[in-house]
Amino acid sequence: MSESVDGYDIAAPDPAGMVASLSSLGYSLEAAIADLVDNSVSAKARNIDVEFTWAGRDSWIAVVDDGEGMTEAELVTAMTVAARGPATPRTSADLGRFGVGLKSASFSQARQLTVATASASGWHTRTWDLDVVEKFGEWRLMHGADDETISLLDQLRSKADRGTIVLWRRLNGYHAANVTDDDTPTQKQFYDEATRTESHLGMVFARFLSGARRRRLRVSGTAVQPWDPFLTNHPSVQRLPVEELPLGTSSVRVEAFVLPSVHRLGQGEYDDAAGPRGWLDQQGFYVYRRDRLILAGDWLGQRGMRREEKYNLARIAVDIPADADVEWGVDVRKSSVVPPVGLRQHLNRIARQARTRAAEVLRHRGQVAARTHGDPLLYAWNVRRVDGHVTCRINRSHPLIQAALRSGGTSTDDIRAVIRLLEETVPVTALRVMHETDTSDDPEPFGGAGQADSDATEVAERIYGALVSDGRSPAAARARLRTMPPFDQLQGFWSG
Image 1 (cartoon, rainbow, N blue to C red):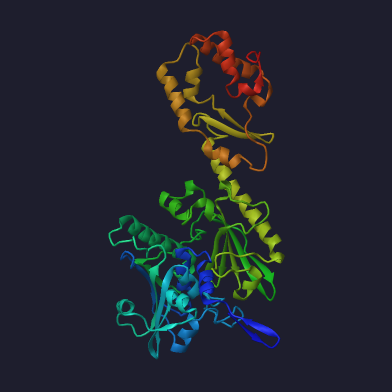
Image 2 (spheres, rainbow, N blue to C red; image 1 turned 180 degrees about the horizontal axis):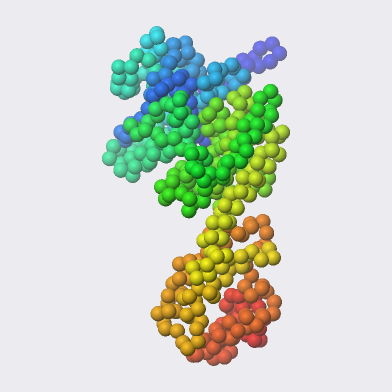
């Protein structure tokens, strides 16, 4: 739709196309709900309830708070797409920026968005029905709502005289004609999403769920528990020095943490510390804006830094000022950031320090687990790094191994015990933390490709003898050896 004016055209976006664009921003359900909770926090709500109600294709989700509410004019502004630009002055409690969060988050999840709100002037209700917008090609913000929606709003607000209710109906993925009330698999999926939402909100709003400013946040009646990615109260956490990095007229606060290894955590602590996405995906930077988590577990595109298990214990808190959104490239969904060029070198340095410390903690734990030193009677494997190469050897001082090597014969039970011991104690942890992914340090059997040394030849002769004893001809035994690792990469009597 366009209008010609002297010297230029008014090229207003088509409402249906705009709705499609806002609906396709890539929100997950939990991220979309977090955007609604942002508004409740900004409205100084003390109690926030997220309700998931299964009713087949009529299932619905609502966010209900006891915040300051809005006047009718404020409600219309809040329901208008991009009514406030990113440069609009906001209060220190406002977690928004673009003025599209409520709408884009809601349109990504539902075809009908209804908001009912009350301040001192009583309750007011407005509804976006995307079918209506697309049918008429106009931004028709409906007064009130249909009877069924009004009935739900009455239930949700109960006797409250202020606050805000955001109600999603005709949910994407659930409003299909083939979804029925007794569709058990779809119902399970619906409530699984509620569980994921609970975990996500506990991570994103952890700082609001504890301390003096504590809010009560519930999902379907269950209190959301704050998740602390840094285990700040654990005595074994290593805290690197806090740095205040200058950015314009303000500064960015950065604090790196190295979490304790698993042997210093109880099983429950370890499972909880893994976070909603698991250890590997939770390592890295955690970027906060006004105490709201924007990005969780990411290396921010730092050169040469990727997720690796040996860095699982490294987590870094970054607090950015609210007026630095532009410099940090905070997106509409509040789910990604791009660090300012001037800070990248400092962030890289801090990240490398944290990663090095984290790898050292795991390496030490791996060495203890594999016992590269210490009592030789306890561990079946020795793992070492020698001349830049990782070596893995069976501990010949172990009593069970010595019994198997003792002259005069060994019982079959002893051999079985040795094999079982080796199977159950493969030093995976030590190998993982000692292996440097950017170097060629993989163990090379018998020194690598080339002429077999005496040790390799002795082992090959034993295997050759066993094959012949088992009925193979000498030629067939040598042919079989030539296909066996590592002899397929070595030259010896079997090669001809």
